[in-house]
Image (cartoon, rainbow, N blue to C red; front, top):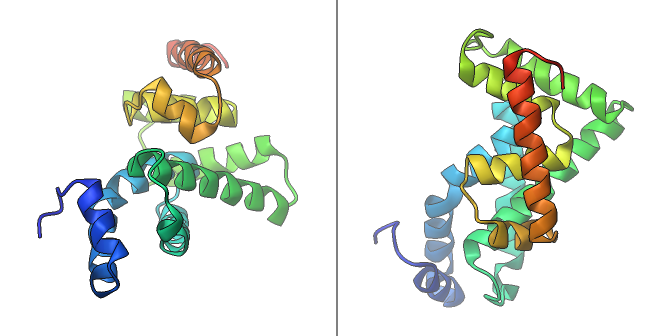
Length: 185
């Protein structure tokens, strides 16, 4: 079976007891890479991203039969992934009894520790700039810039108005531009 099947077909496979695992496996294959990169941009570390992604798919497995299809499957999965990232970051703060800025510094240090890191390359400067953003702006920027998610869909994922999301994205872009130009955020 092709991985490019539409979500309705995959959900139908999942809902039949005999093909449940096959349907779930196809859903994972279809979305795991996109979800991984969404998560990775928020938690930075490959190992942490894999752990969070595993938690996402555990939650999906436990809750998929209750998915009512009010939203697209993709939107529902991104919402779970985003919430799992926020939970992970919050646990990091509590685990190490540190402030959010310390967590962000830790994420920045993980980025710099990457063997491919080169502070002079624009893509690394972009990642450094993104890590300087407040958490909500970072999520909004990542969803819009990397995932090209429409504001309407983002609104469903984050339970925030489209206007607030547009404002967050605008502020994030301005801060990133300032950072890349050499000014401080």
